[in-house]
Length: 299
Image (tube, rainbow, N blue to C red; front, side, top):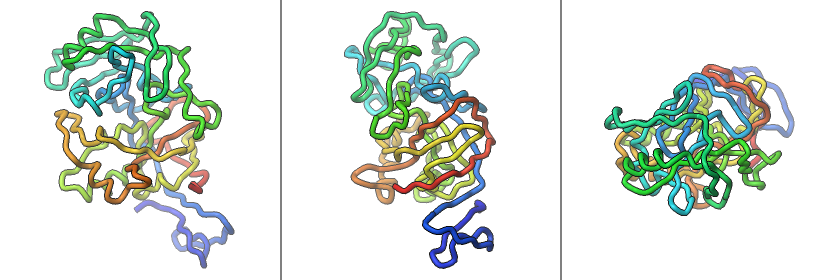
């Protein structure tokens, strides 16, 4: 069991039998560390687990800097096209390698250096400039997915700001749904799986950071924490969608885990699992780094 402080209205805080009165504050501290780091270079394709990840001005390096779009420039995801789950991305020294999970020989290499024609793309209600990667790549993805699409890249000059209702300092994000980082506690997935007939892996939820050592759903109550010299803030719970019901190895779709989550994790008609993060600072995060609690949420 995780080590931590527990609040009692009469006793104050007690830590393994030691108590201390702290008036008007509620906080918890559990020994916690990073157990998983993930990037998703091409939005809605297979993600990559990494040992370390560099925080940039818009999330982890390479995370969702590429995206597939339709003829109108609108983003494409597994929500509408589950077959996208079958394309896996690998990170190489000078580019990305994308291959089909059922036949790794079907692959294409995408160089990091992008100098394509500029276009305008849309992610939800946001529009931003992007670079077309090239017709060779458009044709390959169109053939693999059975639909016409184009591959685009987000250059550094393309600035997409986080929702101002939740931003602190005009933070940026990439082609993610809304925020630069998503965090989930490992214990939260384990609790969910204890309720499921068929347990699901973490890849159903596409987090960037997984934390080991918290209690189930403790990420709901923690507002600020440090990892190394970087300060993080959980600004909004993540509302989940049908993508969580898609098996990432087969592209088959079911009802769970969304149906089960909805029974106990719903609020205002949204099913919540995980926390969207903003941060102040940059540098590398590595597996095993400790998480230092700063402040609990008052939401």
